[in-house]
Image (cartoon, rainbow, N blue to C red):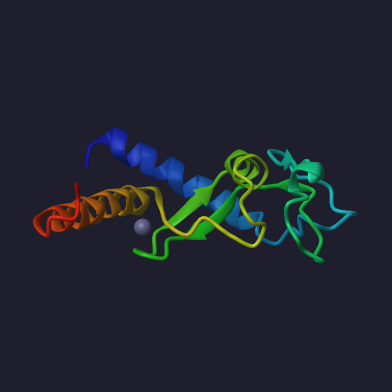
Length: 127
Ligand SMILES: [Zn+2]
C-alpha cells in the first residue's frame, strides 16, 4: 500500500467515525440544534412526500451500508439534500449501494440491455 492510499483510507475512516457519532441525532426534532456541518432542509422542496411523519429540518452526514457488498460509506449531507429536494427522492429511501457497486450495477444494466436488444435482432424483432 502506498502512503497516499493509507492517507485517503484514514480520511475515510475519520469521516465514517464522525458520521456514526451523528447517527443519534433526530433530524426531525423541532428542538434539535443542527450540529456543525449540517445542511438545512427546505421543507417546501419536500412536499412531494406523502407522509404523516415529520420531515427532516436538516441533513447530517450519514453512514449507509451497501446492500451488495456491506461496505460502509458516508452519504454526505449535501448529497442527501440533492437527492430528497432536487431529485425528489422519497424521504423513506436511502442510498443503498456504495459508489463502487453503483458503477458495477450501471454496467450490468447496460450489458443486460445490450444482450436483450441483440436477442431481439436474432429473432428478427429488433428492427
Ligand atoms: Zn458495495
